[in-house]
Image (cartoon, rainbow, N blue to C red):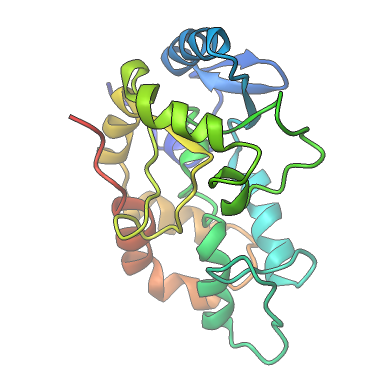
Length: 225
């Protein structure tokens, strides 16, 4: 399945269908609805809190973090004081938890963030590890996904030691489609888009794009067999 570079960079919605307050790729949506129905029979309400996100929405997140208008967190989810940080240090901190615009898997419509809406409200949700660990409200959801997500084509691409992005137990990817999109990702198109944008930290980003793509786009956990 070939897609245009605009789809890969979050510049197109041609491949998406509406779902609740968001958008998902058509095959992803059908598979997710089947999984959601099965989980509900087991008392788990899998609810999306983030689906498709375009380049400009991702840039807004990036820019706010670069300007200190959103908190930057370290690996342990502790807020970092950014005063005196260099541009490259800021880039590295942002990339712990937020994708560079043009590289987010949310652009593809195959990836979404989920929580158990019976256990915690969207307003209370912080999307931090502890919410999905043993004493957290989404632990039962996480265990259910461990056992069943692969049956519906979903897996977690961000896992400890297997991905450049920090582990995200809430992030699911529909790998039958996502694996093909990942194979089509082109550094050249991303570089052009970043050059044309007004993104914060651009001058520090441009010479680093190749290794950043290798680490934060291409290095993900392998999908299940």
